[in-house]
Image (cartoon, rainbow, N blue to C red):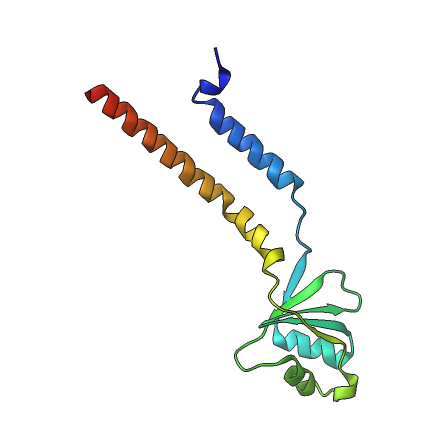
Length: 140
């Protein structure tokens, strides 16, 4: 008797696989969300150490805070404009790096986020297909 032919073994294998997958995947670096007002206050106080701009997303490190702070720029805002608004001259700006879209870093995490939904749809599709075949065989 083949154990893999039992209907109840496949959901158990899928659940165990998901548990192992989510256990082994590395966790993303924790980030704190900030507003442009928080960024301006940190810049005025001189606590901003470095800034990384990725489109409308800005990650910056603050003295004494371990995780990176993340901020979304509003329409028409720039990092240099916010630093100027904070009262800093161009010579006083912290190092600013511009990055392209890093889809290869965020992409796998997005796939893993939607993996349970994809698996549920696949299991439902397989179940419906199996029921359809079983119904067709009974009619013949």
